[in-house]
Image (cartoon, rainbow, N blue to C red; front, top):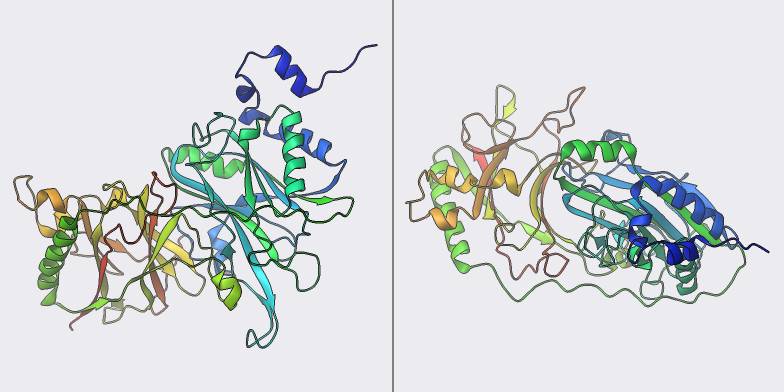
Length: 471
């Protein structure tokens, strides 16, 4: 009698040692997905949903908000009928089978509690609140397991990878076992453990159950053409698994968050240089503008604070320090209908100090929380030299000022040395209409040594000034 070899046994017997990682390539995304769905469906109901990149034009639809999106960082997420998010039983799982992005500065997958139901007296108006708060650290490019290597965080771009979001240990074991039986390496299966008891989560299908999602962030690809192709193809297969036979929860251990900080701070000389440049620029702008320093602050939520307080976290991510340079700003003092007020930002380029993989600033249309323009540390490089008028490396300020940035933001950048123009909306361009509220947000992403955001105590913050035109 002839017996049919399982795929896993075939691979073990006939493929050379180590080639199991090469067997599953990105061209076999659908083969892997279909094989997994067939195998897992013996024990789980499988619901398949699209997983695609955000079309930011939809952010401006009535009632929509986009969580202070980064225009330089495309987001992808599941589109589930109804509210766009999933109610989950305690033993359910959300499974993302994906081709990882092409080479880029950052990518990561984050689990979220998106909406929670509150009753009085917790909130003024009872009902669902979009808290949009992360449930754990992201699985990012410093640690993600892929078919490219048995070592997590190695050879992570353009490879197959699986991300599993669940609260149940048995569910994760069964998902992993089915994939391994297909010859898929266990090291390429990544867990996002849901902290069901720590929050605690309200899992189930009732009218007041929590709603969950996951989000893929990407930023600054090495090849924009490859990224455009990746976005167009959206090489993701996403599904929700529900056990056919009801069983009790075997809760996974609560996730342990990474600790920011290496013990090494940026050089104090950089803070001194920043302040010297501020003094120079305030003097230069002082004749034409009234100048007020803004109390900019960094926003990093404590675990589950938004869930507990029925407030909005707007898609927080522990991989980043989020700076709020200015909120609800309406530039004024118009000349020929164009506001002349500006914002001046002076800071330290944390990428050059090896404290981050990227730094960026975004102009955000406040009402819909959508980024409409952004610049990165690449654009910011040497801007302090330009603003200070330093033209030679023989200048004694050159060494420290090379690690700084300085620029303005405004509707009218005419005559400015380094300026980010606030775009006005047109039929083909997103922007902020004159008279509408603007937010300016900073991002400092991932210190490679720790695989998470840098410690705010180890980086030197930016200084922000409101320049109000004297008319």
